[in-house]
Image (cartoon, rainbow, N blue to C red):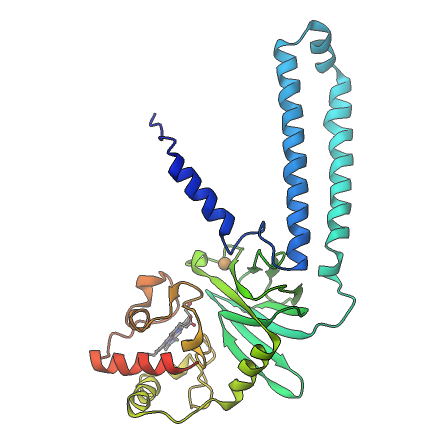
Length: 327
Ligand code: HEC
Ligand SMILES: [Cu+2]
């Protein structure tokens, strides 16, 4: 059998990575997540205590004096330790967990913002609901104002997905034909990474998302700018837009202010302003845009976008410059 060297650098490295990971239920950045962190620690501590107790009983059963060994092998231990103890502990924990999470399920106050999130294979369709105005379509990156109660309306268009941003709160399944609601709140600005938490086929592991929490004023300005899209562009960007429209990208993608109004793929109206492409798979750079367009399978195997290896170098430059300008 091969033994792995216990390299302290590796162990310390992993420890440090997990401690500062932005996707961790143990680094909460909001009320909901704090409750879950508390519950997690209670479960860890309780689990550890029971584990030690079982080890102690095992040791006593093997090496202990005859009197203790007889007691451990009797019916009493099975009745009390095997039935009564688990039933009581698990019932108390269930009650405590439900009590702790009651506000996530039925919030007493109306939300300050509603965002619809629909699971798609393998990306996230997003719509910001606005009072007195039409919703704003987006994809994959969710902006929210800090210190506001946000209600996420979770649905699915195909199979079961699960919405989970651990630093902000619990996870909730997205089930075809059902609408689930999840309340989250970010206490401080930051980028919180999430992940589809229910296997949904193919590149499920590459179905991540980011929630970007910003101050309210910044959020309002960002959302309002959606109505001002369709700006004047320079020659190269105009060429890029024309390539985008003539290549048929608009059959699947929408860009506000253009004829492209497809709904099969992610809305690209602000794709250049997102940190990542392909549901948090690739950094948004001109090179990655070009690579994703000419061969999406290479970066996201199984993805439902066909390859477009039809563009010359110059055309691709114009196309990616255009997409990058959509912020
Ligand atoms: C048949 C439908 C279809 C066509 C046509 C299509 N795409 Fe896509 N595209 C998709 C789907 C589906 C995704 C989502 C991929 C994923 O992340 O799973 C996608 C994702 C993308 C993304 C990443 C968006 C993001 O925010 O993650 C870009 C950029 C993109 N497409 C550009 C293009 C361009 C440019 C064209 C035309 C040359 C094009 N697409 C044509 C279906 C299509
Ligand atoms: Cu999934």
